[in-house]
Length: 520
Ligand code: FAD
Ligand code: NAP
Image 1 (tube, rainbow, N blue to C red):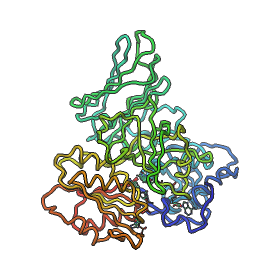
Image 2 (cartoon, rainbow, N blue to C red):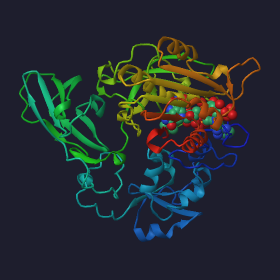
Image 3 (cartoon, protein in one colour):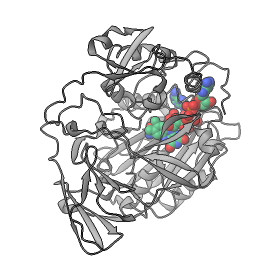
């Protein structure tokens, strides 16, 4: 799996070429792939020039290291010498130089806050900032205690005035139960807005309130059973976490606050939290795409909202690698159950295995019973975009089909207003079409749904549509009586495909509000 192909890098199809967050990636020189970087970090070479010493870095000192061959960057209070990494950075050297000799936390978070830089850059660690910039007044991150984790950015924005009012929590007990109640003060909180992990004697509950993250994080003062139940009282925004005591003793207190307990910060500033999930099944879907099912631990409550993705993490030759994946339903044809109603212990993924890729071959090598770490959900799709929708158009290329799966299931099950739902699915060949027969069956079963396959490398016996996304294909596909109807067009695939599609949709006079594109 360490074989790196000798063609130009990244290959035209490489994920390392596709931009995340709308940025273009640059071609890297041969021998400068992520795997090459990992090899270099394991070679024992002194990558900081400090012979393994860690130093305290003042702001003045940091500022001096602002050249390509001597470039230090601070991320969340830790300083890295990134000069050796320059040629390996998929976003290019210029992008890294934007943060040279300064605090790059904000820049980093804007582009790829999910990238596991602590692991990737550990051999480049110079040390910590000696003097932390003052924490802005009103920031709830102020009480931070380092608990074996990197500190968050000291430049977290203070809460804007229009943010939600801070939730609070309380608890009560019976002989056998302890109930923690979180008052979000926000109507319409649903079960997928709360993610709970109970590990050892600590409980961590993150509640998503609009674009903010509220955290409850405590070390319980007595033992409880591993599993627990959660109840949401939507109309008052109350969440109850019901724990079962191991012993029927009366608790004098709930426990001790841990790092960031009772904090409310913008969601983008909260670090990703992972839990280990077990691989339950793995089945072939096409020649290179598999349906993987993983099981959450009993001590976790997590439901991935429609249209959102998670990050999977594996340790590959000693370095933690993280990549985003969009959970799907187990099938297009089984009855769709809203996340709230699901026995939410299983998460399904449709994953294309790239033989020369870094992450997917490792995933493919996992055996049933092995573990992979799964993050909290992320993404900017809001289910409210589907409300009262009449016409839903889905443009998917390759595995860009994955976010469409739950959207399709949800729309057909829960949108009484839905009149038509059409999918245009772009692939290279017939063999690449994911769930083709399910899509065709669904089109027969439900009159509202229609699917068109478009192939870019079809064989001569293909009678369907051919080519890449184009004005002609789109205007024909979208040719219905759209006047005055409420319409949404979702688009997902390789970044250039998505960018081209958005441009063409604007040319066809669709507004920003009528288009949703999926990106990292
Ligand atoms: P990479 O290492 O990125 O390689 C990909 C391609 O580049 C391969 O063809 C490989 O041959 C080529 N390549 C790699 N290294 C070299 C080299 N040195 N020289 C030449 N060529 C090279 N994917 C899914 O399958 N399912 C999903 O549900 C899904 N959801 C996603 C959600 C989001 C929000 C985003 C942004 C992406 C999603 N992806 C999904 C894509 C996924 O995150 C990965 O990018 C993908 O799995 C490839 O990872 P990899 O490390 O195996 O491949
Ligand atoms: P693929 O098989 O390489 O390509 C699928 C189709 O897209 C092919 O017909 C291909 O045509 C076409 N295409 C590729 N580049 C294009 C371009 N520049 N302009 C127009 N059409 C183009 O795709 P894949 O390997 O499955 O990759 C899927 C992509 O979707 C990945 O980049 C993945 O990261 C992304 N994805 C994103 C999300 C998300 O953001 N939420 C979720 C899932 C997947 P050609 O044969 O002519 O190249």
